[in-house]
Every structure is written in structure tokens, then in C-alpha cells.
Amino acid sequence: MDVGVTVGDSVERLEATVDGFAFAELSIGESSYVPADTDDSRLRAALESVGAELCVHLPFDQVVATSVPRLNVAIADYLAELLDWAGTLGARKAVLHATMRNPHDTDQRPVFADQLSAIARAGDDAGVELVVENVGHQARGLPLSVLGDIARETGTAVCFDVGHAYMEDGDDGIERFLDEYADLVSHLHVHDVRGRGDTHLPIGAGEVDYGLVAELLPDFEGTVAVEVFTDDVPLLRDSAARARSHLE
Figure 1 (cartoon, rainbow, N blue to C red):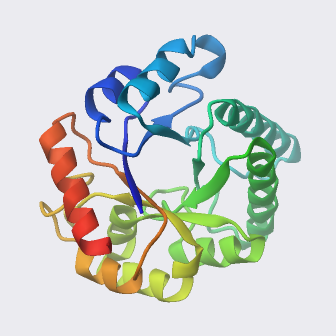
Figure 2 (figure 1 turned 120 degrees about the horizontal axis):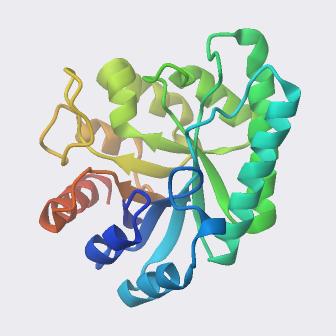
């Protein structure tokens, strides 16, 4: 099991926080780190200096699926371009939010499945594993069970965001999803949350039962990204140690 850390769109944050972690997860595209507008030499040098690999988070400003076919083609093509770029940097995984214009429109869910399959194929072509992330607590996010069913149907790996699942349906939501779909989980986002809305806290500062996560993901061999919104390196390392203590 490799433990890394999310760094948003900032190479500077990568340089400051990733030493000692196995990988950095960098947000790319649109308002984040835009490959076409950026000289990648500093990013490559930063990764080399801390001995870390790269994972990427695909843009989430736009949804994955709409009711307009031409928009869907453009979205898939744009993400394919980003995946191709990520592949040139040796990225291991690319995280994609599971979003639709209207996630409750059941007639459009097959469209999401088709989009997901196309984007995953683009990842395969680039040598980057696509992992689809649960964001059902957000207005345009697919519910946990729907995401699980579509991921299984399309053979797509899952980025299971523990805090997001808790925000959507508490520890019960975590348990139900992992009971049914744990075999699909290749990548984890770990952080803590409180039911009142505080999220991306250091592990131990909130309400998530990580013992339950460990019980339902025994011998987890995937990647784990600490997604705690701080640049305080000791806090990041403490959350990483806590995640390891539960999952290893």
C-alpha cells in the first residue's frame, strides 16, 4: 500500500509537503494546473527531488455527462487530452468525479456509463488507471449505490473518498458501499469530517470510524491519498500514519 498526499494545483505545495510520501496527487485542467499553459520542467524536477510518483485529479468544474451529445464528446475528448499528458509524466492514476448535469435523471445514467467507459479507455491508452470518485454529497454527484453499480457494469476502478461517503450517508453509507463494492476500490481519499459540515480534517479530528473502513478493506493493496486541507506537514504525516495503522 502506497500513501501519498493531495497538493491541489500547486507545484509549490508539492515541493513543500510531499517529501516522505509515495506520490503526489495534482489537480489538473481548467482553473488548476493546465499542462498546455505550463512548463512542466519544474513539476518533473519537484517529483524527482522528493522521490515521489504522480497521480492526477481530473477537472471537476464541468460534469462528466449531459443530455447534449456534442458536449459529451467534447468533455471526453478534453479529458483524453489530459490523460495523454498525464501518461507522458508517468502518472499512475487519474481521479474523476462521478457527476452528471442531473444525477437523479435515471434515463441519463447510461450516458454517464458510456462517458465513463470512453474516458477509462483513454486512460488505458495513456497508461494511466482511471478511478471514479464518489461525490454523492454534492448536488451533481451520483449516489453511492448508483456509482457502484455503474463502476461494476463498466469495469471501472473506484476512488473511494471516505469523508465524502460519510457526508452523504454516515458510517452506514461507508459500510453499505464497501460491503458491496470493496473489490472495485483501487484508490482511497482519506480525511476526517464532522456531520455539521466540517470536512477534509486531519484523521482523528472528526467522526469517521476508520476501524470500520479497515474491517471492510482488509489487506488493502491500493493507493491512499491523504486529502487534508493543510500545508502543516506534521499533520499530514500524522494522518498518513493513522491511515496506515488502520489499513496495513
